[in-house]
Length: 122
Figure 1: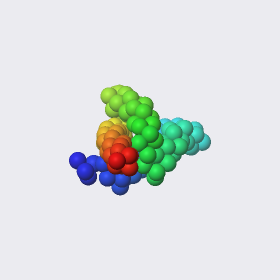
Figure 2 (figure 1 turned 90 degrees about the horizontal axis):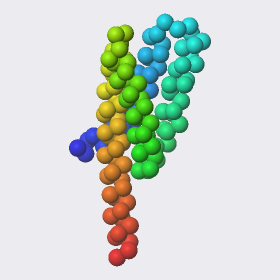
Figure 3 (figure 1 turned 180 degrees about the horizontal axis):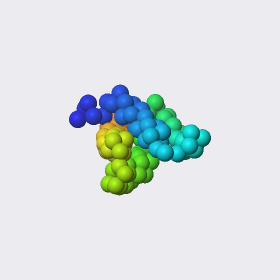
Figure 4 (figure 1 turned 180 degrees about the vertical axis):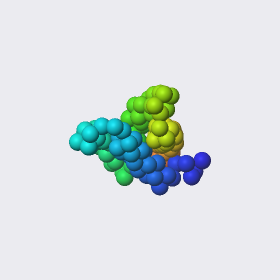
């Protein structure tokens, strides 16, 4: 369990999710200009929450979990569509692992903060 909530695991799967979004976009049959626009739209919300990973505050990790729910829905719909690709399944796996890692890491940080604040009160 402690390896699942390690910050490096969260960073690795976060970057892998960004890569799967970009790879899935550029493997489509869109024009190059459209591919760039779609890639930016798909990756921008993840990049906005990069601070959640670098600062490791429970509140930002919870927001990352909320954001990952949308990516999970998109990856699930893509995985079960007739035109599914390997990138859809990779994104689905990344969303599940990253969600669980961020959720457990936020819980562990909240417990550590609570224990630290109770020690200071004594």
